[in-house]
Amino acid sequence: MKATKEKILSMYKQMFLIRNYEDKIYFMFLEGIMPGTIHQCQGQEACAVGMLFDLSKDDYMTSTHRPAGHCLAKGVSLDSMMAEMFAKSTGCCKGKGGAMHTGDISVGALPAIAITAGGMPVAVGVGLSCKMRKTDNVVVCFLGDGASNEGAFHESMNAASIWNLPVIFVCENNLYGASTHITQVIKIENIADRAAGYGMPGEVVDGNDVLKVNDAATRAIVRARNGEGPTFLELKTYRRRGHSRNDSCGYRDKGEEKEWLEKDPLTICKNYILKNNLGTVEEIDSLEKEVLKSIEAAVEYAKSSPSPAPEEALNNVFY
Image 1 (spheres, rainbow, N blue to C red):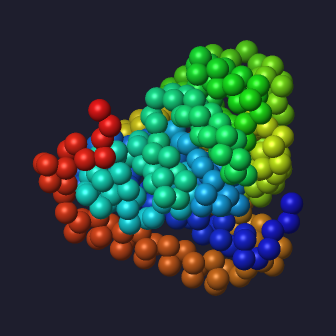
Image 2 (cartoon, one colour; image 1 turned 180 degrees about the horizontal axis):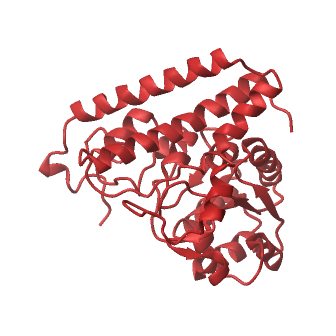
């Protein structure tokens, strides 16, 4: 798949934003500046950007306990994301969500559900709503490899298939469910093989190559919009940091780790841009500086934002 200069530079910029947003969060967390906990997505940027780049504001997305990349790629504002990390009232979820529950329904990003496979039934419900309202909107449902062994996975895949819903299931297979390697819990080589059991296409994609992800996404989106039903995409990727917080990844094989960390999505994309004369080193440097400046501005915005008042505790809460 070939991309225009404008598109590939925009995709690189989004990936660079996600990587550096997450790195900034990581260091602020270690310094004790930021409250709460973190589950980060460094290394999985191409999955989020490639899948979501061509969606409209009116299309939908459900996420996982690593939602930052998904949310930023879907259009949740950087300022509101950062404010949410500081539990401020200007946060995208009014300071009630934290790192594992970001989102903004105004841009089609349903606030993330941190329960493993928890977003899948919700995605099916949203897809059913789209079909009943006769819109051409689609739903991208992110899940991890660990979710593929949950009951909600099978129920959701089956329901989406028999009802022919416009849902694209996107499994970010980073090889680990917390510290458990996928080979210890799944006998088959590819999770995508399970799609056949529900009568939907399943495809394995290089999740670290944003153009390959975007190509698969484009085909799945066309199928969904045309009423041809759900698709299952397995994006092979790797997280560059631990499962959460201070996880040092001591359980990972060092050879495996070295091999995957060398396949950096940002490096792959940058090399493609330069090799195909779609941008210069100076242009890339300029957009990187712009992104870094916006992240620092978002931190200041978050720090200066008000904390929620006690009486806001029950606002926007269904009970």
